Amino acid sequence: MVVEFDVELHSLDGSVLQDSATQKITLKNISVNALLTPADEKLAGEEKLKRYNLAQKIYASTAGIDMTTEEIALVKKLIGEIYPPLIVGQTWAMLEGK
Image (cartoon, rainbow, N blue to C red; front, side):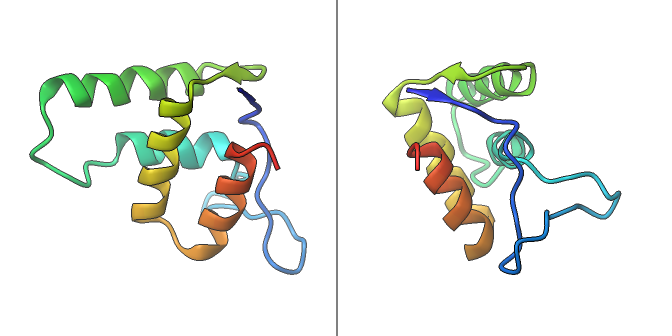
């Protein structure tokens, strides 16, 4: 499935979410951060490398990326572990093509 990562996230009132540096928050920002955040320090090196490579692929994207079901599931899982409902709800919908 092709996923567009440059899509902005919004607050409940419809305004664009921004981080502390007034940079707009996108699916790309959230996905890369989730992939690179060490939620489980006991991961094998191979799994860490897999996450790093996927983060690089997403970060470098300028257009939609064709992602496998497994890659999408991994990104959703990691976003769900570290972000609040406002972010999870929007990003999961985007990753599911909604």
